[in-house]
Length: 230
Image 1 (cartoon, helix red, strand yellow):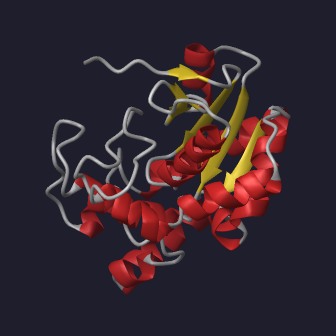
Image 2 (image 1 turned 180 degrees about the horizontal axis):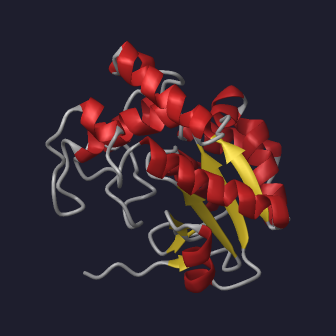
């Protein structure tokens, strides 16, 4: 059966570099829709993409509200390497080492930083772009989600947000991915809940356990050279 999805907010889009926490935020949003009585098999909160600003403009048009979600580059690279080295989703599995991965022109640190910098620049000149970090979502999820829904103009109570956040906690998403409970993302684009190991530990700063000191120094050096402070 073909996947047919409509969007509750047609004038909005969620954008991030891969492995920036987008699946988690989409689950929170899906639960909010579920609480509000929407059929999440047929509707998603809003489109989600990994597009750069120029492509986003072409695909979604002008005037869109954009939630730009970003995450610590080290954690992004650690999670992205784990996916690319174990999954054939994109057509080919990455067979190199972590050190080679972070230095890869198309997958590594420079590519991730340049993607995010383009969206930071876009946000600096467009008040319809709201920047949200994975770290602030971790620190106070309910407050961050409140800021998102208010920006998008979606009405919901603090109690409804708390329920959605509780449903989408890390431990529950791990269980859902194992096939336990209701997966509200089952008909959405992506591999969550399809045996692909989309949910990892979700730890802020976890990359320091995955990369060598030399690789961490390389990441920090590229951040300095590219003038990236996030």
